[in-house]
Image 1 (spheres, rainbow, N blue to C red):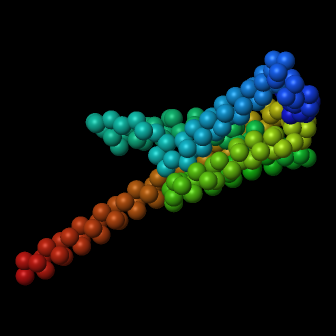
Image 2 (image 1 turned 135 degrees about the vertical axis):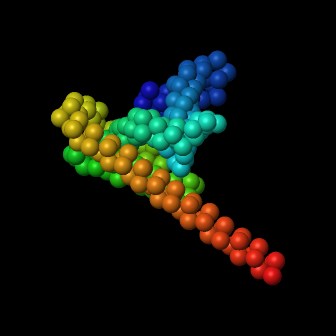
Image 3 (image 1 turned 90 degrees about the horizontal axis):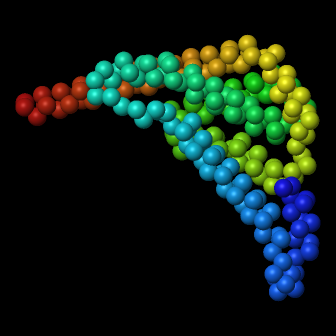
Amino acid sequence: MALEQLSDVFSNFSAESIINFDYSFINPLFYLIILIAIYSISVWHFYRFIAKRDCFNIKTIHHQRIFSLLKYFLLFPFIAFLFFVGFALMILFITRGYDFVSILSTSFAVVIAIRLTAYYNEDLSKDVAKMLPFALLGLFIADPSYFSYSEIAVKINSLPEFLTLCFQFIILIVIAEWILRIILLIRKKIFIFMHQEYFQENTISNRS
């Protein structure tokens, strides 16, 4: 139910209606509460997942490195597709007069920014990831009439024309993720090497 209709329901609310057991206002309010709660819970899981530096918690005892390569080679492209489409739809609902290429480009930029900040600080990445979803919720609560569903439908129908561009952006997201993971691996190797050098120097100095 739209918020305008909910306002009409509460315009007839009074103490007399409660005495007369007229609780017609409860159902629409209950539905609104449930919808907001479900959306908020979904967003909470969504942004916490994308903001993790390591999106997959699957661990194996044997061949850990090989399995890690496989999950980021096979599983991450699918996850990247969901992230990319999800943010594109959010931007599609929020913006007006925005062409589809700009929407896809912005969605790509948002996903890359989230993944980049995830390798720097996951808390920062979470803040970036939840910005658009909750902005969409706030906009809907403040002004449901803002959304032009006919314009959104037209843009969604034009999506097949941009499938090639979508796949190009997804490939770039996967490549960026691999670059970030390689940089992280090099950083870990350098840290381990420096720690070993420091330990060896201290050991030699202590013996002498």
